[in-house]
Length: 341
Image 1 (tube, rainbow, N blue to C red):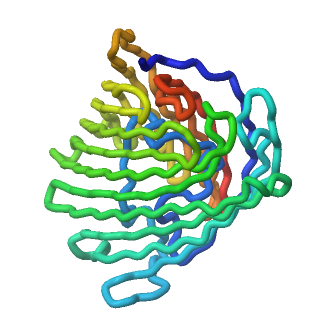
Image 2: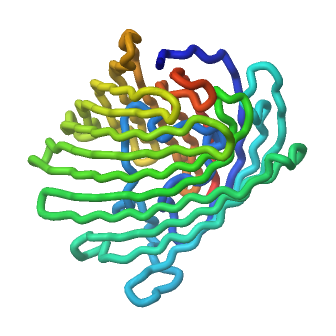
Image 3: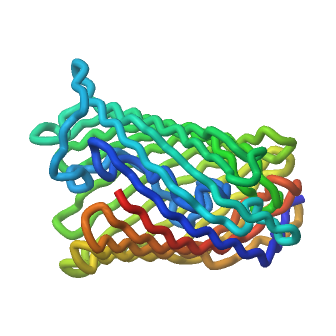
């Protein structure tokens, strides 16, 4: 039997200081978010999005390949971070603080004609993450993140896919200690431009979670549909619906539906704000009443100068417990980070 499980309250303060250098600026996924050390399932955020290769606007003006190997362009990069965390296991009873050192060398391999061509691109991105604890060396680890992604634009329609593998070591909220988790995610995306202001997206995703320890993995599939409209020169709004199925390893499956609203507001060249929110209805079966609750995600990015970024984000999500069979829990997360490249 599956039912909602209240967890908390717990508090964790993490203070990150980081750097990043590379031939290619702002490519791929962030490799050292301070909350990456706290394991949350990929479906944690309410709006499901699929990361695809960035477009031209996300690349630095000095875009060039470190090496050209036949049709492949190679872009290396490296980032590092020192984080003081007063609760590295996210325990509500016995807190352990430490200073951690993270180093992430990475390589992006790209094939395609991004600039001045069809825009069809295939990328392979590999990021190992070396994490060293000053006082608790039993938590030292090397994690791995691999993304294979592609994009095929046509006159109005753009299709994309992503296949990712992520093995991560971090603190699990409902377990109260650090665990090793393996995530396999497959995503298919489509974006269609109706006219200059209106567009819609239809996306699908499959996620498989596994653990080293005797914990509960899961299988999840979902579909996201969005109608987007440019409300003004700077504000873009969207209405969305999500339909999903979640099957924890040791309990019955769950179905859920979400009604969502999102707004994106680039206030200036250096400030970008976004918000999404709505309602989720989740069915558990076996006589357990369905659950109706709010979901939201807020984000803000401020870049006072090139290479310096401050990021604030917060969200609420619902997922199954990795420790207790037949239980779900709701998490509320707030993150503030700074990065210097």
